[in-house]
Length: 77
Image 1 (spheres, rainbow, N blue to C red):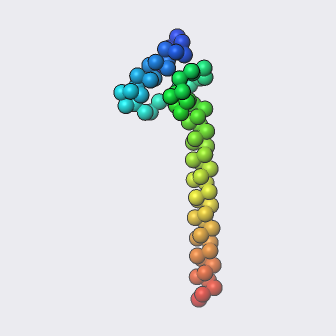
Image 2 (image 1 turned 180 degrees about the vertical axis):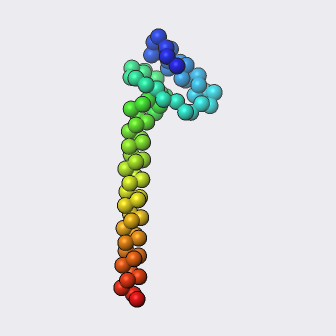
Image 3 (image 1 turned 90 degrees about the horizontal axis):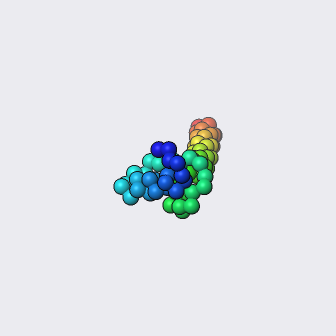
């Protein structure tokens, strides 16, 4: 959706939220509506970056666990 004003865009997106739509991305700044904060491109990108870091850490821990398990098998046999 492209709107002439930021206010019009916020009104449209707020209506979409009221109807249950949650898959929204608001591109651009200048929103005065606090409910739009979590739907901004910047906020979603920051959240995805944190998720990516968490996934990378989980993968690292999994690899470390596999290495320790392999060492235990080698030393016990």
